[in-house]
Image (tube, rainbow, N blue to C red; front, side, top):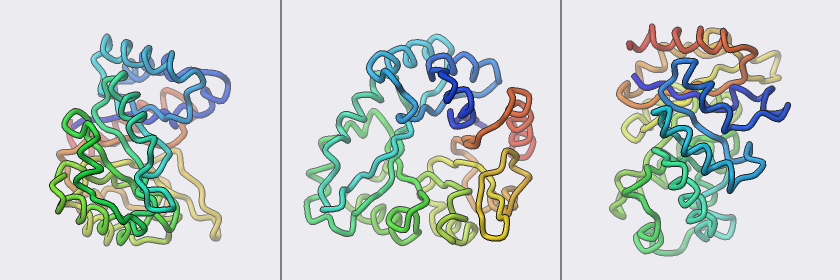
Length: 249
């Protein structure tokens, strides 16, 4: 199996000034197969993306790119920044790039014409269920994926984010069943519900979800990412081993 560490894991260190460049070697030492960098964590983007790319190549790590932006803007237009995001990804040598769907319901253009401009043969593009009613529902995701696949872009897929279903009040198992065929990537985190106040757990086994059961509804030949803040490298190692024990080395 392939285990990726999303850099949200190191949130406390990032807040103290740690660079995602420095986190590349740390991810390698922790025994993961790759790093998922978050665009919002870059402070000197142009400099740092080049350095992340170089360090990851030296370390033999997969690089994925989490971009907190939409594919379709509120007016229905394709986000004009997409090309820039893909260019940044190329510099880092990324495997996957992730967005939120946004306002596909307002799109009036030609999907084939618009998406032919993107380097989709070089970088796998996926959309994720976020914590909003716009992009975080099965209907929004399946509507876009059905249309984009019908337009010929069958490689564009979906990132199943377990923890986010709690925030949109979605059914995590029904969503897994509905989206399994399009799932290219799985983000794992659990959610604590304290009388309606939701928070992200630092342990897969703590929270409202039986993640082991949910994974039986999803493909097991995709990349898995741990995506939740953890307080120590020992805890990160323990969570990696927990996941590997269940899924298989």
